[in-house]
Image 1 (cartoon, one colour):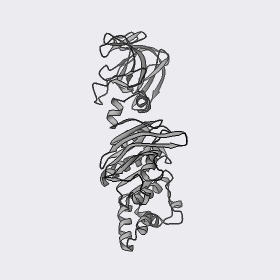
Image 2 (tube, rainbow, N blue to C red; image 1 turned 45 degrees about the horizontal axis):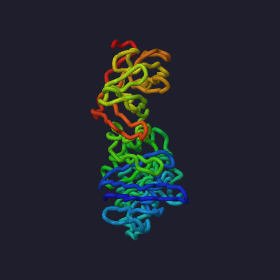
Image 3 (cartoon, helix red, strand yellow; image 1 turned 90 degrees about the vertical axis):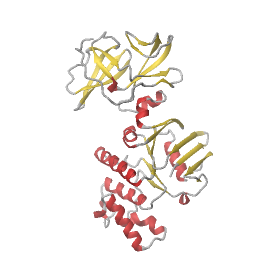
Length: 368
């Protein structure tokens, strides 16, 4: 079932929590609302759930205008960060509770509970109480309780944030597979850009109550709409360097690289850590720098380089031998850089190559 926000605003006193939100999630879409604390993402979710009323604007689930409907009439299921399980009920009783409220027969409830519990691999725990379960098992019970209702949409508010890193990794994969199996439209709120990039069909990036970009993870990664999206999405985030464009080259300090044609104009150049190489200092189409720190990551190495007063990150091969303080150059792949207006922060030139092919390795001893 498709979901839509039309010019939705929400004010709390004198504060704008959400400003003119226009957003459309197609039927069956996994939409992630991503942004820092206080950006409005949870407010947007609570408005759709009916837990808050908008100051203005409308919301739709399918063709139904649900703006003023009670939560029970919206046919949605929510999964919370805190699990919200009944401690005095068994796993089976927690899962079947929505069906009991609907007046489903005992046999119907039992069959539905067993089917969903088997789907989430918690059928062995149906007789246990929440206190007897691990965090990952409790989260599966909360998901099962939402799924058993067969709602038109799932709303999830940071459901994995209480889990440790390994469990989050496992649950991300399970949630993504489960959502595709069920085909139910899902809105998922998180501040974790890794969750967003790995799980979403569409990402809505919010900041200060405003939608900054709505796009696929690949588009947000390759062509962020503005400097906020570029600096927030990615781990590490996009490298950003200020400079000027003159005669088709972006110039910064001792170096320059080819970009768009144009007159001397202040711009901000952006490139991802995997879309650059470490070269010798003074190599063509590079920026002069000094190695600030080297971080071995097992299968690769992350090298932080000081370029003037800024630091940029470059992904290189495992076993990189450069040392802190070495003089070097940083050569971005000219086909993958993006340019932003310095004053407005808006994208003006996107990457011409959206593939994920990695540049070849290089070192501080590479000849130009």
